[in-house]
Length: 462
Length: 137
Image (cartoon, rainbow over all chains, first blue to last red; front, side, top):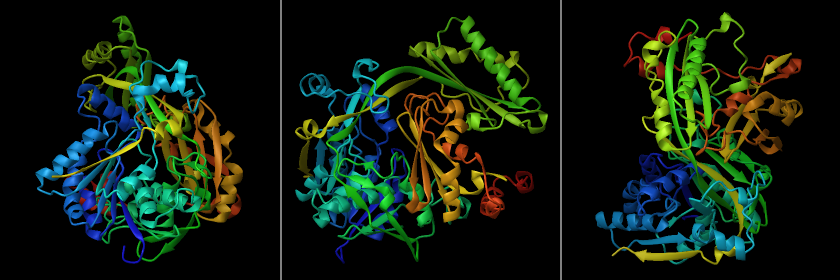
């Protein structure tokens, strides 16, 4: 921090992102590398992992990221903060320590933040702590929760991470910490911001929100002139340089790819946002309508004037339950009458499944190339004048049990020679085995009953 | 005069559980005023039809000339539960800008640029020779 500012970077936007992207960030010189690994879907994936092996439940690409970052960490040039712990942060910390040992890099202190996982005390929290766990979006009572909960993760804020940094952590591994709070933590820690300095905390959350989805703020998923972005095959990831007053400059490594502009950033500002004037972070309620953007030369944008108000008394809590098994299949059809052939095949398939006595709880029939993505927003096919040149039928189904979900797909196979013409022409036939579905149940939980169990555990690599 | 939002706005969509949000972005104040007037939550709800089971809320975001629409019951139960191809609603932005609105004469000629893929052709020509003409409509 040469001039009193803190430099943070968004090195990962999801579980499965590319670890090679952090090289350019590390070379650029950053104080903190923040790795955001968890979406709602990710927790569900990690739950399936943990069901198979109790030692799993974290994002398994963590060692690949650390292998690149640890040489910088051991030199004291950067620190790493990540929620890669998923639903098993302790196991993730073991993996991190093992990575450091294998690389022969002792002396690194790894902190683990635990306490976001309330699965083991859900009943007690309901019966004795007054937590209703009503569905956040629908208001449905917890009595209607569909089956035994598989995970229950509260979205913690920045404070336990800041505490870990204050205790000397070089790497902080958490479970379900809110995405943007991963970035606020080092900023607030370095500048010594008070936890009721709402405007500054909101500024840190805006920075975090802009960086948490890696490439998506500098040209990824960009609806503007996306084709004109330089080197789209090599998008560098975003960096923020944040001053003590909360003013920040968003930039990218000095190499060819990507673009940082008010337009690329405003796309990300509203990504996965409901009320922009009240963005509910665990640490503060940020007003995204207050943010001022200013384009600067050289792929830099200054953001300022962010306002915030007091945080709420609750954390978001995400619960999940088993929701059956799905299968899917795809078949391509050619002109003429491609759409009609696809439709007829879907009907024949459904009829055959019915004749086979296989119970299906839900069907999803889509016509790729016609309206699979646009649904009713696509104008209907009026006549042959707008006939699609080809059409891929995709059928997905949900069954109560795994075996039935697998058997359903087999009812399509005889149609190879016994269906409308030129079917099964190799568009891929979908996953071979059934996939477990999980329903998710967002709700709220009082901060007090969570915070009392949050712990920071430090271990130094020997 | 009718014009699709595609010619007037950028877009991005995201998911939270079974709720999708779609933001559309205007490039100037005149366009922002127009979409703020024309693109109501009722019109968006009607546009999506059976794709959105619940209500549509709208938020104005004047500092970035954007409207943010929150679509309830829009993702077939939410990502880990949904049978849809687009279980995370990523393509709902494109679906929204298909909506046509009434525009004044001053904006009737507005067109957003179309993709120029010279660089992509240069790459693909190396692996699939002589198809450049075929790929261009």
